[in-house]
Image (cartoon, rainbow, N blue to C red; front, side, top):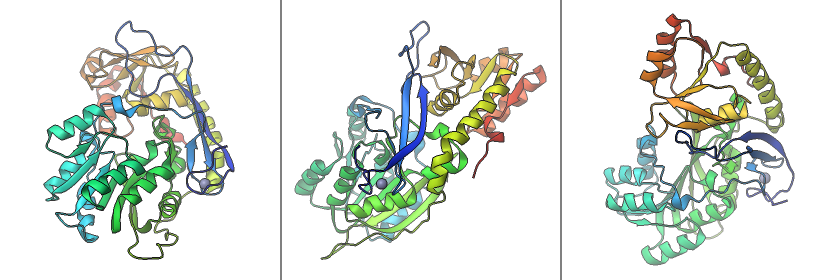
Length: 398
Ligand SMILES: [Zn+2]
């Protein structure tokens, strides 16, 4: 049993188990065989001492991010300006060194540059994404971030005044080493800004579709603050923000200035779920999924799911509808015209094509972040007798 990366404890209990037919991001060309003959197991457990949720050791989905090219340019949230403004609140000036760990294609660094910050370094493992950021004039290091890189940067450029780590911590195998790296790249008094998905949101809303094979760890407010405190960082602010249909934790912490360290961090935000809610998540999901499968089994075919991104594939895999969907709708050219790897490959077609041709069956409202898209499809197809099911309408939450 590997010790908990947050509290060092060893008492873990099962949180969620499910299967999926492919790791994220795989779409099949017509005639291309499915990537796996058998589904892959997803197995999550939670620490009964601190509430960290993690992929079970030995069952981690290990991805090589050095070859991944998916950019986040379209995912810069509407609250980015608030994050930028917060740097000045904590005394980070235009010429102070700011390091971003997991800088992707430089989207956030460009926002910093537009905000008049001039001394920026991005660290990004993906070769292509790092190259793209370099081509945009940003200073990049093509590497995984960690204690070693932090030491190299501090030697070459001096200690940083701020370090940014957005939607990266949940993907790394060793969260303790990652947090130590973030702390060690900072000068005394330096600021760390960390953003991760809020696990409370998933648990309270029974949103299993946000459980994702790329996420090794799932944090609540308390486990994130405790991990930072373990690396010597003191919490100074934490916020919970909605983004589309998800919820993120925004966390600011400082490396204490002077002797004596910062001591244990004060939790600035309370958890919204209890460990008892963790223990019932699987049973609540299973009961919900069984009811949904019955409704879909009784519905008119074809069964058509809206969206073919990882959240829809997660939802269909985890709810046991992986063999029940006949068609998926997605306008992304990476997906439309291709097939989604479910129990058997499911064709993906663009919205105009579906609206012009489908005249029977049932629409599954699985577009989650995009209700307007769902409404447009339903309004267009309902006059032809096409039915609708809103999967989450009847779910129990706490
Ligand atoms: Zn723990």
